[in-house]
Image (cartoon, rainbow, N blue to C red):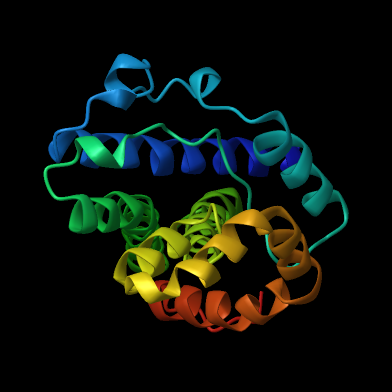
Length: 205
């Protein structure tokens, strides 16, 4: 039951992450996501079977220290943005910022409810929401395509970096797998620090 619960929270967290991309793109003049019917919180419109279900399930069952996943990317056309450079950066940041907002909101709820009579299940639910959204925000800042961090970084780099950008885009799947296998644990201390900072709970999780 805990596994299903964790995956359900993750799915809704990645859904709001993706929908926020579409809404910010719309704000900058691109209606691609709107026409594709992706500006909805209906998870069935966004699920990626591997990234939204199978990978999170594998991570939970293997007791991995870092839970993450993804949904089908909400489509947008950078050529339709009123400002391609800053519009692309804003669209990329939107998902990260909405996950941080959710984490802070529920983290503060947890912080200010600890002095009251609350159940263990309440603390567990709120903690899971905070942890999962922080994990998504941190993971998506990694500058490897197709993660949001790559769109932010590549938009800021001058044209002379095109060969490097092209290399990262060409071998993105391999780079992602290498990062997950060998480097994702290095994000764990950041997750712990932010969780403790927001909730006020001194824990190593």
